[in-house]
Image (cartoon, rainbow, N blue to C red; front, side, top):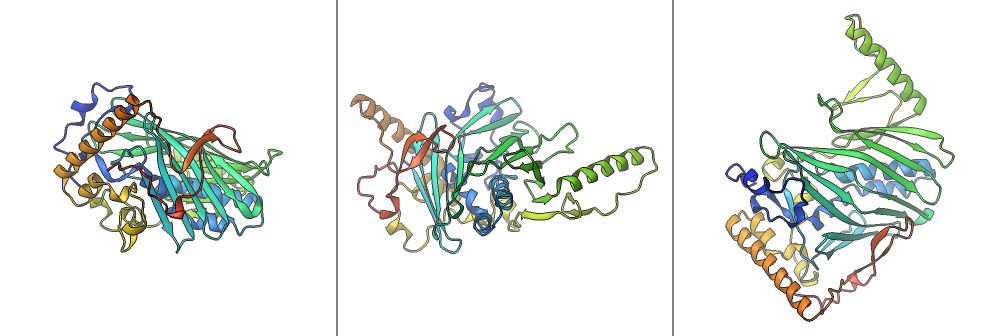
Length: 404
C-alpha cells in the first residue's frame, strides 16, 4: 500500500459536501489497484454456497444458502478503505474459474451515470447470476456513503427458481480524522419469485456505542408469511440459522440476564458459545464463515487472497482476452507495481482520452454502442436492468474499441 498520510483529502473534499463523487477527480493515493468491475467479481468468492444451493431439496434451505451468499458478497469490503478505479466506458473484465465451476463477464455500459453490468454462469449449467449496479457515492463531511442502486438476480436453473435483491448501503467513516472504518447498513429483501419465499435481512447500523457493529439479523418466511427460521451473525465473520422459537427464547433469557447483571445479581448466560465475536445460540446451523485473510493483507490494501489474484495475468491469457479487459489497464498495473507517479499520469491520460472520444461522438452524433449487454427490464422484477446478450466467449473481439 502507498501511504496516504501525505495527501490532504479535506482540501479536495471540502467543496463536495452533499455532492455525488463520481464526477470528482480523486488523487490516486486513495485508490486500490483494482477496478470496480474487478470488485464486482468478488461476489463470486463464495461460489460454493451456490453450488450447495443447487443440491438442496427444500426451498427454505436453498433460500438460506442464497441469503448466506448475499451476505458473503459484501464481506470482502471489510477494512477495504481504498476506492476502486472507475471503469472506462467499454471496459470489460473476465473471470473464469474452472476449479470452482463458473465464468463471469462484466462491462462498463454507461459512464454518466456510471453503470456496471455483469453475468456469471455455472459451467455445469446449474445457475446464472447477473445484475447491473449504479453506485451513488456521496460525501457527508466525515464520511463517504455508497448507495448500491441496481438489481442482483440469482437463477437456480435445476429448480426453475429466481431470486432478486439489492445490496445494503456502505459507509466509510472518519474520512478527515481518525482511523477509517466501514459500516454496512439497511434492509435487504431476497425474494424467491417462484415459491414466494422471502428473506428479510437487517444490516444494523453501528449505534452510539458500537454494540450493533457489523451485525446482521433477519428471517425467512414462506408465501403465507410463516417464519421458518431466523438468520443472524456478522457480515464480517459468519452467519447462522436457528428455529424462530429457540431464537425468541434465547432473546428473552438474554434480556433477563442483562437485567440481573445490571442489578449486580446475574452471571454469564449458560449454553451460549462464542464464535469469534458472535454468540451462537445452541441448535444453530452454520451457513457461512469468512475465510482468513493472508498474514500480509494489511500491507496489501486489506485484500483477500481472492482479490489479490484478480489482476494476475497468467501465461497464455493475453492471447485470449479482449483488449478492453481491466488486467490490461496501464494505470492499475503501474499502481500494483508501486509506480505511483506513472499510475497517476496514466490515469489522467486515460480519462482525457475518454473525454476526447465522447466529444468526437457528440460531433458526429454517434451513440455509444455496448458490446455484451443491452438495456431492458429485469424479467422477474420489471425494473430497469442491463441484460447479457451472449457471444462474449466466442472470442471475436475484432471490432472492440481501443480504450487504453
